[in-house]
Length: 247
Image 1: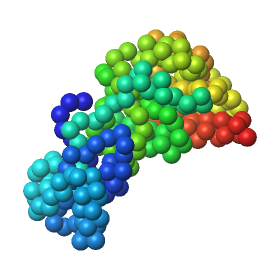
Image 2: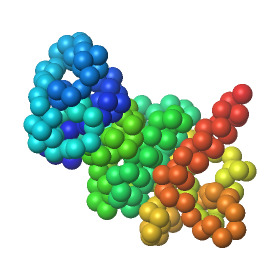
Image 3: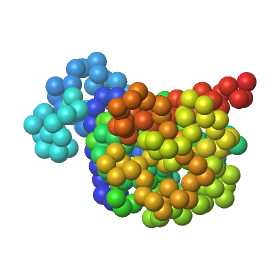
């Protein structure tokens, strides 16, 4: 995305200031922030040679365009997406990733990034169109994980699938009724899962390029899960399987 954006909330801003992937250019605090909290952000800003400004809460709301975030914000010039070839070239021998097809809700994207970080996924790939970009709302929903997980933005998701397959990834579509039972699924050393929107699922072109499919076993009468919930279950299961194999 182009143009500056504000990251708000204590934990998301702390994560942003601790990130080696994203760079803040200033910190803005409202005068309602407790002194002990303000002192911590001022100290961290000095360490990073960043301006740290304090203003009345009404001005903070106006400048950030936000009413959430406890009066704590940091501005970044733009979100730094990872570049596909550089991301792939730095991939470890054992790797896992998500590819997203039609995930447009910031809360869902944030939840997916949070699970990706929690279960040591190596990145998330999403298309530039028909997809939610990384925004301040995504940062908040991810609890700051958006500052650490590589996000690759591509123009063609099918081509991204093919490129990842060329680099040794096995790609699996997350399907509601088809595919291997996740509880018995053995992932490859390099495994990526394609997640679709809850409403439309994965587009056929992307689904047809995958090497297979996985499904989450659920009780009768339950057809699907929220995509971010599904991502958390899949991420945990794959990490557990790969850890057990390594042992």
